[in-house]
Length: 164
Image 1: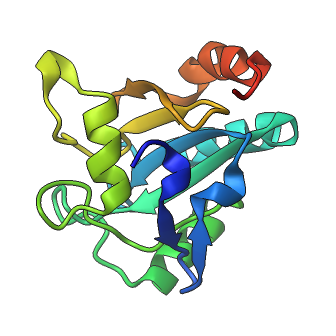
Image 2: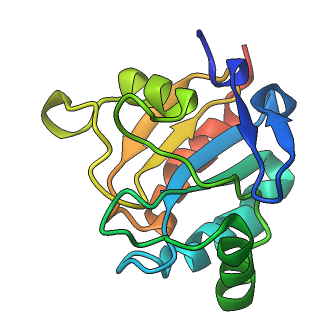
């Protein structure tokens, strides 16, 4: 796999989407959880989606129950929570594993493309974020503590870049 566009994902409502459908857009891919100390970041992610979506940003949420069992609900329950509590309108995908042998293939690729602190490939917690350029390549990985608003400058640079 050579770019984010080589992957498919299941949407939270059971459909399938090819990430190639996002070709030419800047992507912010985030593993989320509904009962985490970082869960309020849904509000910041929604703000980025509203502020930059018209300019070419797509925020993609991938719920995961790997860390502290903080997203145990069904996909329907997660979707309802995100919409009711945070007004989430950006695309949410079905719950996935983000680490190990059972990790979604997209996450297996993302962690190889952008290693974490000290070169680790593991996702350490909920709300790890990956910024992907218009060319489908990972620009940067962000820690869970990085608030969505702190990514604005990098998003604006990525949006200004032409797709190759």
